[in-house]
Image 1 (cartoon, helix red, strand yellow):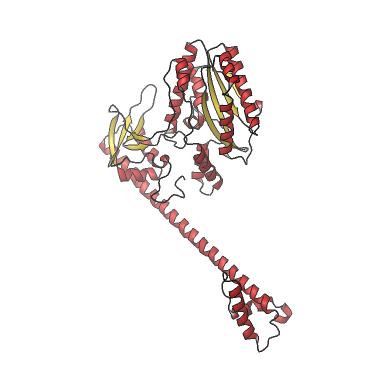
Image 2: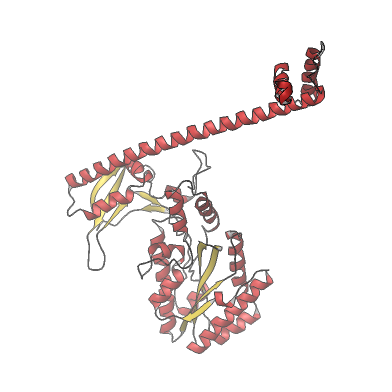
Length: 436
């Protein structure tokens, strides 16, 4: 969907190349990691490019979410080790169906940043022992349009009472900052609580759209706040006529990539004795370690077809489900999947050709209607100059010729009518009793 509108040789977002063979790679390695007590059998590929996008890539997002969650857990553990309290919160603004995602994001992020600046914030930090603030944006879409909100985590080197008071004060400052910018933030839309555990804090704060995809530790996705961007993308793919979902996905893809989440700043790291940790998205090749068995290879052109037709997950799932993998079994699974991919690729090509022909016919029909309408306008203007043709007369032929010349001179952008066109239109205009 993100390649629509791009030229054949134009590069799209990095997610468009995720999973494709790396430069000069002739074969893709397929690996299978056996099941263990805490994880099932998993199949992976090596020699492919990974975009690393936590916002746009359903393959990379779970890994990004896991990293963010681990980052939050380290901060929580460091806070509790120092006798502190970790505050979790949420801030958002009132919104409606016509609000653009980019405007909501700007209002929320700028207001939350403003709430954490100035002398009053410095005093609040001292009272609550605030070591810093982790910020994690999240986006959903529902009946009231886009819902952009920020989960935040605030490690406070203070007791629970002081920490909760600091969280409430931060929310109050946020609401005032929203009002100054012309927005509205209701108190019931905000939230603050004390983390029950590092794991709970990690799931709550770091989930974002990535963690919604990963399903979190609870094993299910919340549906209470509307559709996630993954739901929107899935709906647009499943139904090409769902232009609403397609437009929403394109809007999300234009606004959210590059947005950082759960960043451990140098100041926060120093206060808790941790290493600073950014959240920059950086892609590259993904090659597994040598201790994961290589069960076979796939020619790069074949892998591209499997990937393009959406069967990469199917193929890897078959590798995972096989009781044992040897060369004949691998070859059989690859042949089966490759045949399905070729068949699907042909159907996709046939569908694309049918859509192209349909669109071309629609353009031709529209052009013909436009041409007819322009000719009708020229004829109408000629008739306005001629007046009544029902009386006939020896000069009728000359009058028709002059009318055609007059219209051509006065309206050079319109097609030139012929005398026959004008006579036919005049006949159609005659009252029924005269025509009889």
